Image (cartoon, rainbow, N blue to C red; front, side, top):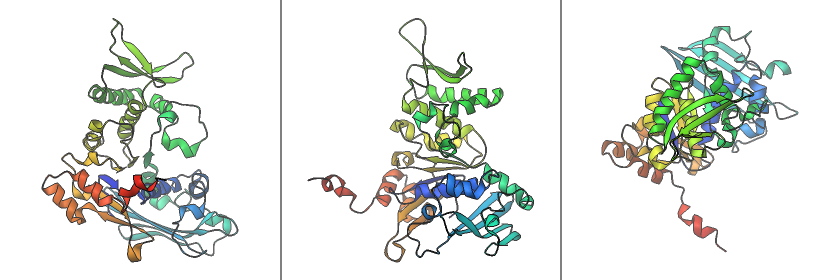
Length: 362
């Protein structure tokens, strides 16, 4: 499956959309020198038995992961096989390979290595990754964002690494950004908010008497002086939109967005694809969504759609992934300027969904 500069992953609940993003997060976590495999598989996730597919057969089953990364003119491929360490539920390396434009830079068969060696990938060890350091740096730039308003409002969750992708310390991160870059992003966010929020005048970052950063939203008021609200008083939708705009502009590595439409008005949701293209013109952004209204505007290419659906027949135990460019319904909808969102909703509807309301009756 080839992901585009801008990709939209759609499918029914529990079909594997979030798992696809988590596989990319998992590789990012592998590349972190302080933690690597054991943090990725055991601290951030509950262990080998949970990160492998539920449909894998046999106690000795293993996990296979393969990722292609295009860096400028070079194609890098990373392959990792993991198995369960016994006794216990830790993941250990079975095989590992790195290649660049077909040239193999690492070929590792770890079956006969000692226990401690197998608990680390060479991706995470500076002593072993000098030949593919460019790949390691690129993987570390992957960012995942599934912003939770309650966490965006707090700075008190120090040490909770498993929550860091959900918004805690967001205000600290904004405050640590160099002033020139911070002001540029806030200016862009201000322009966007003027088109969304009634009574809006200005958004700024201020610090209280203890030096803690806060968002300050300035609003038109019936009194002569404007009204002010900080993040504690902002609606979930407003706060989530501010966080989303910041995340899109913050960095140049791949950005994984989980359901960015949550808490947003439908008219704002329809603008998200264009917003992503405008703010992150040179950045890869991969989005999961259930908001089919997002796709009813123009400018979405069929190749940017990734359908994830439950398998049937011989593939009943796996999800089936299809690129939109290979689906006649999606291609026809785009060519004839039909409502693409309506077509996607029908393509991804679960058989029997019409019985949801009646099925819970007494």
